[in-house]
Image 1 (cartoon, rainbow, N blue to C red):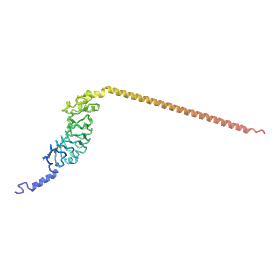
Image 2 (cartoon, one colour):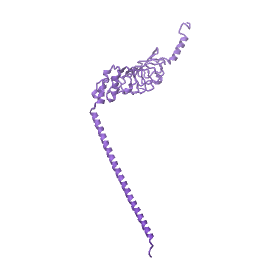
Image 3 (cartoon, helix red, strand yellow):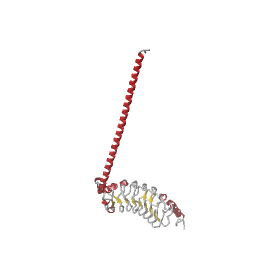
Image 4 (cartoon, rainbow, N blue to C red):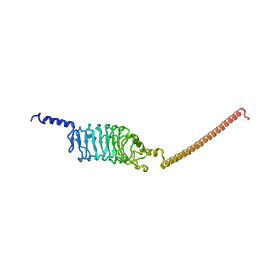
Length: 315
């Protein structure tokens, strides 16, 4: 067989070169083709370290991975699609996605997330779809979590244990279209008012809007949070309930007590000052009288002496 007619050394050299460009061979038990790596349902307990560097789509779903190492993940500078749903990832750090700035799709749903650092997604300015649903122990999100994800159009926050959200967390999501919020124990108190107003004026699509309901307070239990803005505004701004009146009464009593004590202290200080001033005046008067007596005595003595000197003594 001639070199030109079959897969000879040139083809082997080409394959070796492509292997160097890609970074490494395909991970064990994974399927790699056309810049796509599928490692789904392989019982992986950690992130596979030998992912080809030119990978654009990476599927790690349905495994037992507990963390995403930034050092290895950051090498995939062309990655645009990352599916990590149904794993055991516990937290996302500020530097986790530091090298995958081209990422468009990210699925972290059905994990064990308990925290997402404030700037975890800070480099993901091209991110369009983010799913962190079914992480019931997440509980809260920092107001800077989505600060730089200005391209985000789809956000899924279902079943995350969230009780409240800060309106400023959505300030930069100007192109957001779809938002899922159901399955969370929302506390529709006055601190939640700004976010409920945002839901009304933003005209977002809420496919699960009727199922995203308030758990507290009792008066609003079962109300969809997309419709609770006006009742909540009435309760927090224009309406005073019994607790508010009790609070105002306590504040009034404290102000009255403070004023009374201040007036009493002022009176005591005034009396003490007046007594001290009067005593000082009395002391000055006594000193002045004493001085006058002393001056008179000296004048009298000097006159007596002068009279005594003017007349000769009789012997």
